[in-house]
Image (cartoon, rainbow, N blue to C red; front, side, top):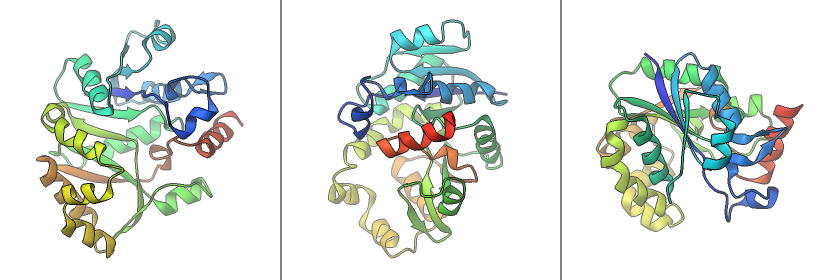
Length: 253
């Protein structure tokens, strides 16, 4: 059975990418002669495990781009990332697991997607699967790439920009998710929400993947799982000019 996918295509107003493009949407930033979002959609189309694709972004441009694609539907985004996700999932009008990807991972491949979904299949029963990539894997394939890393007992990891989620939990978890997103630049408030004990364990480098899984599962009232991916492409997102320079070098060369 194939998994349906939702691609989140947000705006770049006020971000570091705004200086690199005249477009108001990062989805429409050009890499070569293609929009950035199209690299993500192309990888999903090539995946043996993906069915329908919902792209939540600039309707006029993307509807024109995918007008000959019966399995691709374009819907307008919401005011926040969580609202955009909810609109994408509603457009599927189906229950079950959904793969969610951001539009700013143009290096993603069908192989990386299939591998992630295969790893998820080996751990059935969870509501949310989130990929993490070891620092060594990133630096081996993309030397010098700058990512935000977290040190855990098992090693040093960065997070991916796609996840597999049970569509049934999105509405119940949306308020908590909005709260977490709103506090991302307020460390003290975020610490209170997450819990000082968890933060202390993290700072002392005593936190394991299992600890993180259990804590956030309890926080959101779901069962979440961290999946170690050997494909750095799942976490190489474009959020600053140096990232855009890297992916252009890789994809256009």
